Length: 294
Image (cartoon, rainbow, N blue to C red):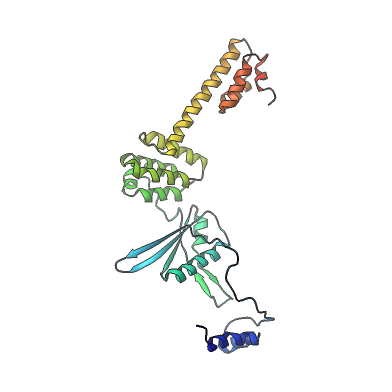
């Protein structure tokens, strides 16, 4: 309950707006002299919803040391606004749960990880009011797991190794080791590892490599990823068949097929476009006419 002493202890600063400027000298605080002071609204309740969502929040319980919270953030690049958000998360969790909190920031490049792992202080120079120290990990901290036997001992760690090293020169060996290890586990175990690894790769070449390894090594696998790979293979086969048929029609009709026409036809993977071209190939006066109006 709010008491008169409580009210007096802070209202006195409203009464004399420059009181704190003098008090700092009494206390020896290293703060500059205030030129002006303004009373601001003291209601800090948000009038509009503000999204403050930590990526993942875990409570870790220990029989000996009690419980702590682990707030996990995925950080793709440096963001000057992030430390303020992280400070909010930690202070909110402290207020709500009353448990110690560890903030873990996972990055995919060393520069971002080193930036995220810096101690950030907030407050006037020489007198920080708040300090936050995340634990940041990146490819320079994470082991590159390239041995299938080692990957099989801890599939989740191997997947995290692949995600953290996404785009690195050794990513191919990491993916190969992980896909090999996944051969020997049930589909229900392999399923989330395959999908999370696929999501964590940010380069097209790495994604295609992973898809190829999954298709080759996990023939039993029935997830949407492997089904997508097989569907794409069937679609590519149909497209190749249409392209071959079109070129055959043109040649059988005695039409000259220049190299640029042949290259454009064989490079096309759109079944609808190929069907249109094939229809035109039956009556076109020249091979180039199949591309009419395009």
